[in-house]
Structures are given as C-alpha cells and as structure tokens.
Image 1 (cartoon, rainbow, N blue to C red):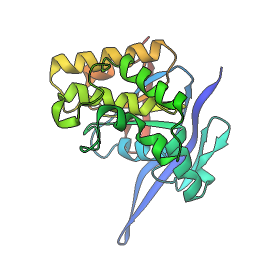
Image 2: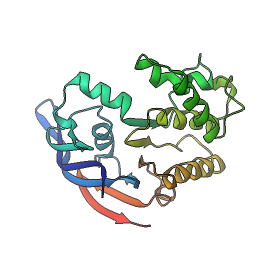
Image 3: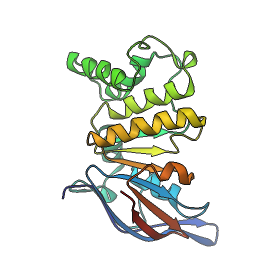
Image 4: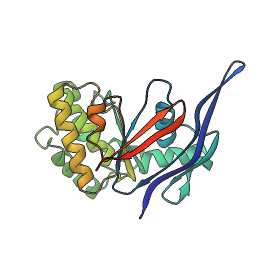
Length: 228
C-alpha cells in the first residue's frame, strides 16, 4: 500500500503569554493513496491546527509528517513553499479566486507561480476546466459565476500540478444544499478516478460522503472510522 501522507505522534504547542496551549497532543495516522478522508471535531479540537500542518502552512512542535517519503516537518521555509506549490492542492471555503482573472487564468495561477506555462500545461488547464463542467465558461470572471461554479474553478486549480492529495477546507461551507450535493459528487468522482482527498468539515452529512472519518477532541485522535 502506497501512502500519500503519514503523521507520527504529531504535536503542536502555542505559547499564549505564560500559558502553553497544546493544540495537538500526539496524533498519528496514515493516508493511503486514493483515500477520501473527512476530519471532524468541535471548536478547539485541533482540526484547524492539523489542517495547517497537513498543508505545510505551519510546522509541528514535535513528531513527523511524511509526504510520500519526505519528512516535511524538517524542511526549511523555501522547501515548504515549493511543497505547497507542487504537491498539495488546496480548496477553500471562500474559493480564493483572483477576481481580475478569467476562469482559465485562475486555473493556471499555480503554473505562473512556478514560472512555467508550456503548451501542454495550457492543454491540461483546458482539460481540467472541462472535467469540472466549465468548458463553456473559460473567459468568465469569478463575479460572473455562481458559488458552485467558483468552487469548481478552485477544484480544477487544485489539480493542475497533479498533487499528492487535495486538501479541502470546508469546501461546501458557502453553498446551498443543491450545490453542495453537486460539489460532493464531483469530489467523489475525482476520488473514484484515483485522487486522494483530505476534507475538513463540521457537517456530519458532508463527512458521511467520504470513505473514512477522523474525529479529533482536545488535540487527540478520538476515532478513526472506515465507512466504505
């Protein structure tokens, strides 16, 4: 079994004045390639901290985080920036699209950050736009799109570098129930095609669409349930 990610005894402490906040107190888990995992937990459980660590947006205080074979917990800032740009696809609740750019240009953004946009890259962006159902919206800007369409752009953008996994932070949090269903169906289809997905959500109904649910409480792994 190939692993997309693995964390071992991951801990994160924050110093708040004289008080030490133990946001994560020793979490270990494996994410096999092709998994679809939902992370849940009440406020203060540590799920936002875990999200930041998985996304290489922060470093652990102790423990290991392996992305493939690389222990990214030990990497320098420049290396972490490269990891974020090339090996993790991010999907956010607020979409984080650039309003002045078209659909196609927003999908291409990660390639601009790497200083490359070859003809085959442009072809891939066209393909991804079609895959998420936006082939007829390439020249539109975010303000001309619905919330669901904007999230589809964000999903296509997250896939442009063929990342180890997609990290989706409350991907349906700003959407109505019908559009939520459409986005979850898209994520399920991507997972069926082999993409590894880690999703943070506070909605039980959304989490139940994943293959596996991780529940955190007080900085600890409370349960790890395989549901399909």
